[in-house]
Image 1 (cartoon, rainbow, N blue to C red):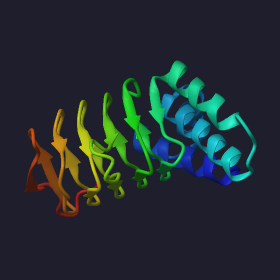
Image 2: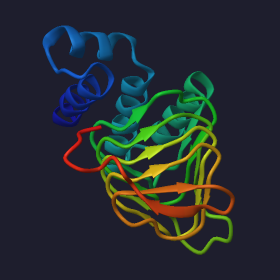
Image 3: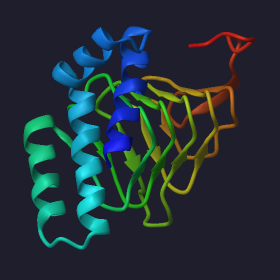
Image 4: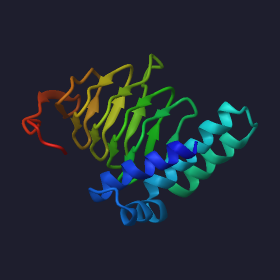
Length: 178
């Protein structure tokens, strides 16, 4: 668990400040809701793995009440997941969230018909109010527009916008680190 927390701090410092020097890491650890969320989630994962009763539930309730985010107990969070605004985010079921995924707030990642949960690959940005529903895969480095409703797979290096989402290739992907 300690290794995961250190890795999360390094990745979040890079995402938030563009660098992972000691000052950036300290700032993320001491002031970032993203770090608090991931730290609580790592503690929940440890409690589940060790089969410690009630700890997962208590930490989930605290996470929801204090930080305004609901993350299901079966969800897998990658390293350095960055919650720009955590309020109103719901990640349910057994969704899988890759490394360095960026949530901009008030997002839903789950299912509408109990037919499966999304897999979000690495380095995806999810705009404010976006919904990703069902057994879909969001490809690496894709961007989900604000308020988009994604009901189908999104290939890597794509942009999904609208209700229901339409998918376009990204035009800024040529050797650009975003």
